[in-house]
Image (cartoon, rainbow, N blue to C red):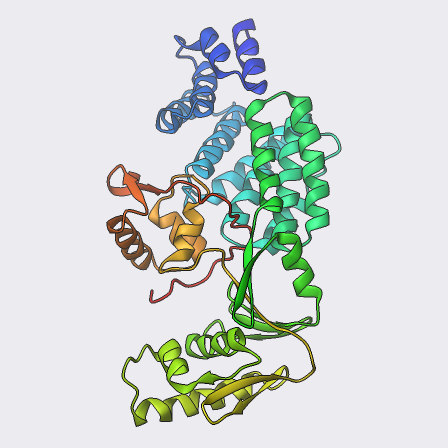
Length: 406
């Protein structure tokens, strides 16, 4: 490898793409194409970066398996940054296997971290943990160690283990500063904000207040009966009743929990569960049926008592009844929450992350665009959607769930 290629590679490792381009900008050989592609990616020109990396893969000979695998890993990182979650994950796995086979453990670990980040975005925490468990952070250089600890923190936050998340972020901050890469330091600082800004709202007896992630963790360990709008469950410590596939029952449970210990009038329950403006006997009959079903589902946790005006929730044991709600609730709030990371998402990537149909996601995006809440650029498969980050809130608790009315 010649000295210019070596110098360009060192500049990229230090987070200085302009210095790298100064050395290889006019070269068309395979190593230079690969380095130019990575430099363009660091500068934010992702489309140009992909073109250069694909040219590099074709330019490397069949005997240069390691170099080709490194290009695939770089392309996978671009796909992740551009939220192209449909990018073939098997290609990344194959590249990682090639790198491990040839002893390039650093780039193999980088491929593993990219896989973990993708799995986190689509909510597959168990798989992400399995992959991360196979990566040894001890021999990694500072930049890679920071990436590893960011992945550890991401999983811990989603598992509501804030102490573990904070410890991992401290490690990440230390490693990022040692690496001296400003973008990496900024990424760690942004992750820290997730612990310091409201992650949810707590509603008790009709009164709402914001909760930090640490407070959400404490709520989960408390004896409170919680109606969780993130996971569509009703739970009390280890006992959980899922209503994820029963939207009417969940709407009734939430209405009862928000008003507890008071009762909820029948007309209010009908409006919340069925959307009916004019209450007639058929609505009342349906409400009785659905309350009976909800009473059966919640039997391990609470009863539902009929009152002269409506119904009231009656926990099995004395304690608080609370609703854990999203920081912002409106139509298509789940889509907005994903877009709040400030990245540009394809509708196909949103559908994959949400576990919803792509057409449902497209309809939601079109309605949000009409309301001026999101904007798009590009056309066809290159079309991307984004919105400015929502100030003062974190989306750490966001889990994939079906779109409402999707």
